[in-house]
Image (cartoon, rainbow, N blue to C red; front, top):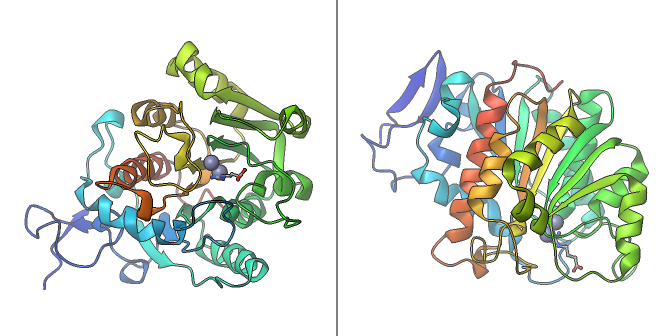
Length: 326
Ligand SMILES: N=C(N)NCCCC(=O)O
Ligand SMILES: [Zn+2]
Ligand SMILES: [Zn+2]
């Protein structure tokens, strides 16, 4: 079958859905070329089929391919940002990392190494999870490439700065405490957005504050509104290299039922997308969209939301100078 791709500004784009039905063929993100089909990429999208770090419902190991399937409906022009991501830059799907499902330490090492390899030529990396454990090795790679600790903007119902579960240090509830301990985050520029729900104790918040995190809760988004939230976040981040981590459970379970640890009272997909668009121009060196668990998804609701979140993140990356993630 001929691929009939859109090509603009010398960038090989998606298969043209007006000539090849969008439901045909193997799924890559947004029907983009695979990394091995292009000479180089400015933005690479990679899947991490790993969920050995979850504390409740499993299944995020299937998340990346579920998001790829739902991303068939994405189109090449992003009107909300008046931008054509796949014409602005060469964007490609790097496939999935081959991570050990039985050895979390080995998996973390492999994710870090693969992320370093994928960004060796300055590509900006968007990762589709996988559970939230994977943010730790991705942040290690991002800060190594940036040559300094990175700012973190973390969208999640949860803090994910807990210490251990069953004595385990590396889980989906602990990546950001480990990252602070390792000195790979710029503690002047750490924010959670969308947190809510019961905690183990008040101490969780005290620890989190001590690490340097500022919190915009889900209720804050409701009461303050998107514009005020974006202004605060931009001020905190400034010109620093920025990593954005999106746990899809930041959305209300109505918008994202397909996830492992759902919490009521979340933000809407419209609010999330609007906040992300508000980050335009910031030095976004890397990002992830994690915790999509298809077994609990209905009608691809979660995967549609995640695919649009990824699309807006790719759009932001596509507008930044090439090679800038190095
Ligand atoms: N990162 C996510 N999605 N969830 C963390 C929840 C940890 C807990 O079970 O308390
Ligand atoms: Zn979460
Ligand atoms: Zn999380």
